[in-house]
Length: 77
Length: 472
Image (cartoon, rainbow over all chains, first blue to last red; front, side):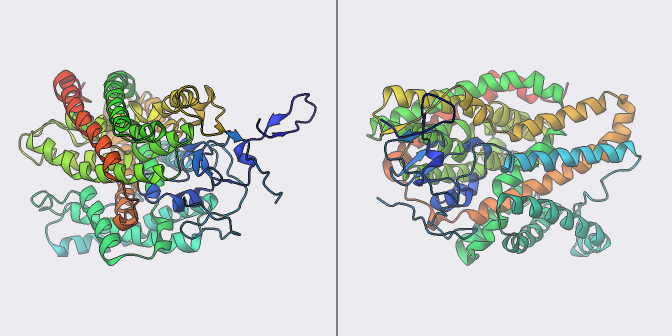
């Protein structure tokens, strides 16, 4: 079962998405550094990536909206 | 298995290190697409306002003209020094401010862009030499070759990559291209491009995917490779990688293979098309189905367009090559990446082995992954269409073409040249991931099918349509 976050005013908790996880990295320049050649014919700043990033726990490309059981909340800034 | 460290963050992390910053939101506001639309459509509107006020932006849109001797080009540049400086200042301000907003350090961008602009001036000037066609010195190819030479022999400091923004430059160029590509042409020729591109894309993806799986590669990797070959190159490969949850190391492998074939095709496609004396519109369509990235494809299409009127036997206009390419690649292929990603994410969830990651996909994926810069392309075309409707043909040819369309074309040429140079300057063969024989073979099988099918459809089935592009 995937970790969830309480959603205010709702009876059902909201699954915690990768976007809120400390294992998730999707800063454009970090993606370019992690993927040699990405900036040669594409860009970490492209709109079609829609927030995609890399999961350091699974070592996979993931959508910002994905979720999993290894979620760890990102520390507040 | 390698992983990305999470140190505290520099604004621009060193290679391989990831900043522990808050994640970038999924919104497209603040992406390169948004800035390309702002800059491109902004330029078009400025050009329109200038014409309405009895003026023109052509003073700013300066470029070297035909020359025969070094003395001539020297005089040209000296006489136009103020214009060239103004143009440089304009681009520096526009790209500098927007890249700063994207998070790229201005202190790095400025010197890098100085280099890009200087080399672009050199390349465009060389292309205007009266003997350039004799020595096949097409500006896109010269720009790419110069960039590759510099980055793979002498080598440049990596921090200069801050100014080599391939995608940003090409997207800006594409938005400006919209202003020079009639909306009526998009509407009339677009459906043919979509049908042709769909056939080739589905066949190419199928061949790559099946070949990859037969060679023992996992389906998520196969899908990543397939999207790279069938849809829109590196961008599609990484978008699908995210949609299906591909392994981290598979993205760079797909990137390496796409870059290899994209650069081969930049040189090969124009050469082969020239040997076959294909009309410019037909060649542009073939390049549109058989190139793997917008930036690479524009280099090839613009090169072939340069043969128009220069190489005996090649009919059609220079614009027809670029227009046909744009219709095939941008309208026929790029537009549909959202659907590819959505469908493949469904397949990944329902048919392939679980990765332990739940991907919440839905039809919204189609819009989220829509290449938003295309909206700017269409908007620019629509603006000019509305403007043109208020002029008679004679006045359109007397005023709009020289005072609005021509300067926009010149600015577009600059943006594309920045792009072509940047491709070469950022492609360091030593740094690319090792591809391995199996992924390379699977992708190459798709390349072969793509080339043949693309040729048959562009030359045989729809040859008359593409040859007549823009002549009606």
